Every structure is written in C-alpha cells, then in structure tokens.
Image (cartoon, rainbow, N blue to C red):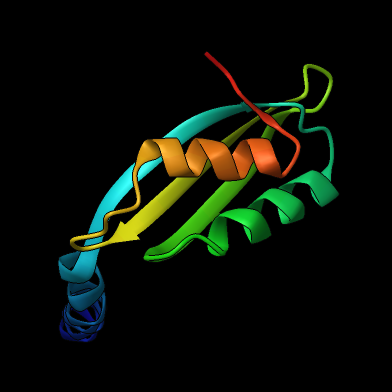
Length: 98
C-alpha cells in the first residue's frame, strides 16, 4: 500500500514539475464592479486576449460589495505589464481597486 502511494505521489510530482518550471510571472489585481458569474466570464475573456498570457483566474470575492480578484500568469519573458492588464480590466467595464 505504501509503495502504491509513493508511486502515485511520484507521478503527480513529475506531471506537475514541468508546469511549475514553465510558469512565468503573476500579476494579481483587486477588482471593483463585479457582481455575478457573468462578470467573471467577461473579465476572464478580456484578460485572456492579452498577448503572452498563460493563464487567467478571476474570482468574485463579495457580490454585495462588487469586489473580485484577477490573477494573470504571464509567459516567461512576457512584455505585457501591469498597465496593460489594468487597461484591459477598464476596457471590460471594471475598475482596479486602489
């Protein structure tokens, strides 16, 4: 049983390691103006259109206060900066919380 568990753990580590090694920098931003799942989808779509974006995670944190958070993971060597991400958020109709 222990041998099976260790083998499974080794497979997990080996399958995750390449993804971790290739991950670029991450930009996390607090968002204002989000209040539903549609907002999450809209903002996710807008951020995924940016060049050199590897992954986007958008979450609604508090619907009553219209707060969300966006995490954008950029490819290694990306020239996309925080200003470009903030512009995409604004162009999608949301505000970056300051």
